[in-house]
Image (cartoon, rainbow, N blue to C red):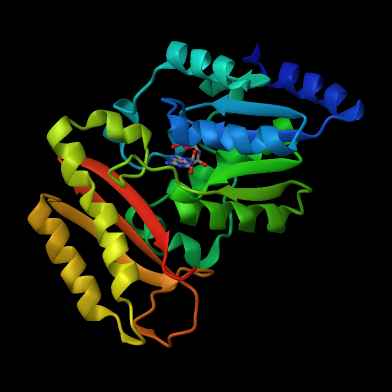
Length: 283
Ligand code: AMP
């Protein structure tokens, strides 16, 4: 695995590789890697001749300073995992390498409704930060395929929107969510939880399954209210949202017609740690 920390170096290297007929798959991450991240790399390796992973904890996408400061970091271990998994290229830039002119005058992106609902609503500025970092990374890496996790479903919709808006040639592959045996979605933030909290956190997946098993044509409000009570009883002391939403737009589905594709999404805090997850409600 070749490691780059300078944008111009990796960019030049990949341009030559590309000119020599290599196809490039790219997996952006914030590190503290787990099997979910590695499954994205695996998906890239299956299709592309060269797979690039980046590790960069992007300050501009954290709407809360405390969340940024306690974000888990394990670079040595990450490098070892990527080596073992057969990653070809790792990009490990500094903040100044990513934002040479600082973080104050970065572009603003038109994201429509996606910025006003769910994650967009509860984490103001978050998706602007995600677009800022992805814009820069896409300019540097110029991948054929970008592989992202369904775990961050709204983020996938935002990035697809960005790719379309800017006419990038990169195509987006959305990979399935990897879960612990308990059903808990793998997440770097799980490292911040103790054993008892990890067990309680499985209530999120149980909630998503409950919604999947019980959604019937008609009003959805009772199901959502039951879900919120269940999460509260389990120990989630703050719940940002439990939503049944249109799978394409994420607009809330208050009255399901029995046909439209929907997705259930949850964001809730356990002991101050915010966890998110989602599940498609139809096959
Ligand atoms: P992060 O490091 O949290 O920014 O995540 C980097 C990428 O890994 C994103 O595309 C995430 O959606 C994806 N990812 C995170 N958790 C999982 C998971 N449990 N299964 C599959 N992909 C994941």
